[in-house]
Length: 499
Image (cartoon, rainbow, N blue to C red; front, top):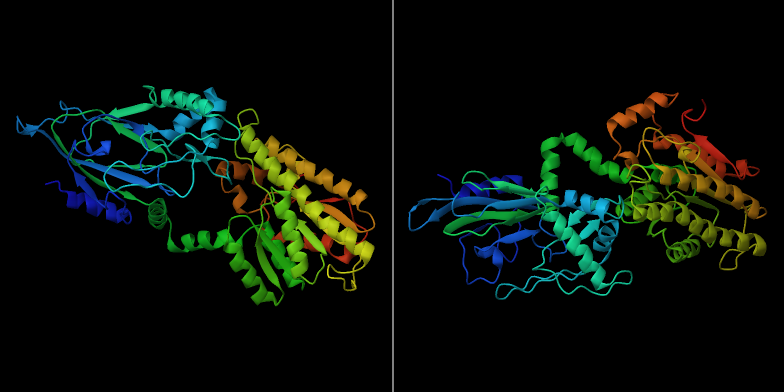
C-alpha cells in the first residue's frame, strides 16, 4: 500500500524537509475555497515555487497518492486530467539568450518585488528585489530562475530598462517556455515520486476533475547538496574540498611567502570570509601582523579606502603591493559569450589592477617626496615601493584548445600596463608583472579533465604548477635584490612558452 508516510521517509533520507507557511510535509486534496491556486483543480502554467523567499526551496517533491472519480469509485487518472508539466528553465533561458539577447539582459537585470499573499494570514516578501534570471556574480552563469506571475509584484522603473521593455522581454520568455519543444507533459502515477530542482525546473499542470490526493515537500538546496557530496565522495575527499576552498590559490601562497619572510601582510577578499580565518592562522604561524579586508576591486572608491585604511593600521607606510585579483572566462568563443561577462572580466582583471596601482602609487610618491609615514614620522629604510601584478602566460599566447579571448586580452593589458607604470614611476616605485602558466587552483575547476590533459601534454615539465612554486618569483620582485628590476614580466610556466 502506498502511503504518505512512505513518501515522507524517502524525502527525509535525502535531507531535512523544509518548513514553510505550507507546513513541512504536505498532504492535501483540492479545495476551491482556497485562494492559493495550488490547492485547487484549475490549470497551472509553468512556474517555480517560493519565489518570494530570499532562498527559494531547492528540491520539490510531488507524489500522486490517488486520483478517483467518486461517482465511479475507481481510479481514473488517465481520463480525469491533471497531467503534469516540466520545463527546463536553464534550457529555455539559453534559447532566450540566443534569439533575444536584449530580453535575456532585461530579465537578468531588472529586479522585481515578489510576494505570497494568497491564503488567509499569509503575507511574505523577501528581504530585497530579485530578477527573473539570477546569474552568479563569480562565474557569470545562470544559477536560479524565479518565475511565477501570481507571486510577482509591480514591475519597477529600472535605471536601464523601462517597465514596457520588461513586459516585452517577459512576453518573449513566456512564448519560449510554452513551446511544445520545451514543454514535457506526463501523467503522475501512484508509486512514482517526482523530485526536481526548483531553482532550475518550472512545473505546472492541466486542469482536472475528481478527487486528487497529492503529498510532498520542499528541501533546502544546501541540505541536499551536502547529502549529495556525502553519498558521492569518501570522507577524506569531502574534507579536502572544504578545507581547500580556504587554503588554496596563488594569493594565499603569496601571503604565506611574505609572512614567512617576516613581512606584515594584509589580505583582501571579496565574498569568501574564510580569509578571516586564514589571516588569523598566518599571524599565529609566522608571528607577524596579518589582517583580512573585504574589498570590491571593481570600484576605485573601495580600493582606495582599503589601501588608506591598511596604511594607517600597518605602521603608516606601504612597501609592497601585489595585485592578484582576477576571474576567468568560461563562455567559450567571444562571439558566443555575453557582453556582460566580457565587461565583468575586464572590470575585475584590468580596471581592478589599475585601481590598485593608482591607490598604492599615490602613497609611494608621497613617501618618497616627504620622507615620512602617513602620520608624519620619519620613514626608515625606504628605497622605493614595489608593485607586482599577477598576469598570465595567456597574455603572451592564444591558449588552445579552450577559447578565452577576453581573458587573454585582459592579461596582456596588465603586462603592458606594468611596463608603462615602471616608466612613469621611476624614482619612487618599481612595477613588474608575473605570468604564471597553468596552476592547480580553484579558478580552473570548471575546465573539463580532457582539456587539462591537453594542457599537460603541451607543458615541457609535464604538469601544472603548485601555488607554492610561485613564491620565489614574488619574493624576488618585492625585495631590494630586485632594486634594478622594473618593467619586466616574469614567466613562470614550466617552459610552456619556450618552444
